[in-house]
Image 1 (cartoon, rainbow, N blue to C red):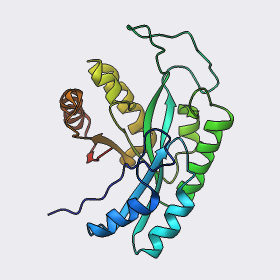
Image 2: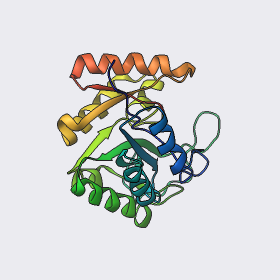
Image 3: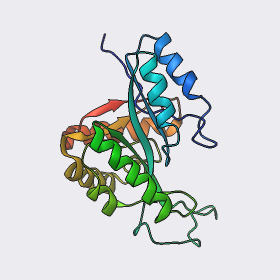
Image 4: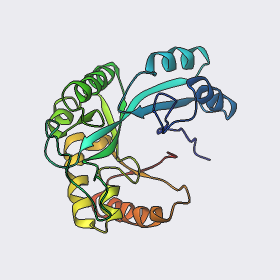
Length: 213
């Protein structure tokens, strides 16, 4: 059986989206015999030092990352408060993207991206854009995230053409370090998303990686 490592995890540093503590995450990995585990809090890296030190002390290899908020339209400097979707609610002008450091350069770039997301792109969330991603891509592994991710969000809307266009963009940026993130949590829309992701895998050769959000 292939070894499974969790690459998409939110701790209590992901406000309103993470329930586990850093200790809980590391203890669970150790309990289940996992040699490594990642921390990918939403838009922030508040927990990485605590996570790194405690993981190393427990004999677990820490993978440092973040789930970035990427501007959906325009750039990180745009502020649009009047966009709404079909039900009258404010439409989020961002999608999710997982970024993982594969070396120290990647870690430094993650810190820079997180900082610029707060100081330049903050609008409801600390957002980054393609300009920053291209500039600080070195040393990073990229996965397409959840149903709200840069690729899957278009598959939810039935727009395979746009999903393929976005996947092509990230493939050009990250090369072999870009993966399509496939998930199964029992949510209705996941079947539609996974069907599209598998199709993209076959059409483009972008590898799939299984995660549990």
